[in-house]
Image (tube, rainbow over the protein chains, first blue to last red):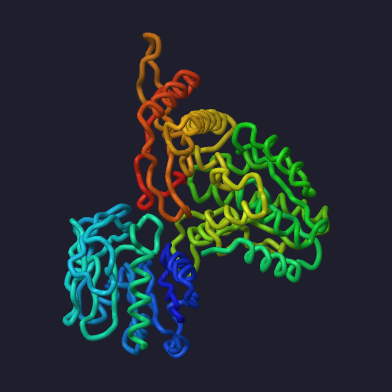
Length: 191
Length: 315
């Protein structure tokens, strides 16, 4: 299986690469200025987090929009990757009412594929100033925290998944399980 | 998951092809640069010179420990005393980035001299993933310029070789164990050393104070861990703050500086949580610092911030 990580300048982009590598996936980090044609052979993409405010600095998000429009494979957006996905399909983002850094309690609302086999609530690691305010039409909220309503979402029409927290870092509980679940969804999609 | 044997095999072959002439390695005696030194030594043997710089910013007894370790490893090494140069470069510098860049540049100037004398055109560094990630690049914000990446001067001519570029600390440790490197479990210590554990100007006086405080933190936490009172933390040290506060010592007014204790748990330094040190251990550290260092420090605080939002070191 081939899953590339689109680099939006996150501190943990390389961690996403490491987790995928540990899960025996063929992976590499590609700049977000890569064209869709250069990645069209992948089985899935991960859109990393990064410093941009996706609403006012969408230019810094490179070709994320093209990837989302043209992907005929699953995509997992993380942090800024999720915020971009939300605005791209008509949802809204804004400065978080309360920012979340470090340990945060996550509550799973919908088990879905992403949270299969993990507890209904557990600790995750966060690092975000902005948040998704409203999810796009056709998307479902999968998880929330005490201070952030959208911690995970998915499209009901296409294999698009997104999380606000960071499953790729060591301090997030069950992070590797969430990646494994995503890879299982990728496998099923291509079956 | 990560296979150190495969990694060593691959890297040694790659290094053999890459380094055609001679090389020097910047080695602090920490796990990253020592592992890099052993790898390159396996690849090119005598064509490698290991260089340790005594910046004047090292911890108590560190230079002597490193000398003993190098002797044990049997590598070809030189210890360079550059204390005066480093303190001259740090004079008046209080901005964390300016300090890091001054140190990065000074290191390269020393290495350039050593490389020229040895006839080397390659500089090997033990750079690991967090160093370049946090130093920033075209798309990534600069969190802090690691001396070996973001602190490099633009006009350097040595060719860089960085065999551990994609690894994190836990992976480097597994390579170190595989290679039988004795410093495999040593706690991380930043390249700019004690200079970034002094908030404000790092000079022989302030560095001397934080050196003593760091030694007390290390001794007490290691003793507590050896006794089984707590697990040994991942990284633990003291930071000297420029904040003065009022105290009372033997019925006399004291107006002294503050030391912050920092201790964290981590795997890869990219996220970290503060250590839940038992109160009696914190108390012993506090008492020792304020009694033994009474002329300089009259207050001790404990840093209870995770990364993010803080970083492990304060600068």
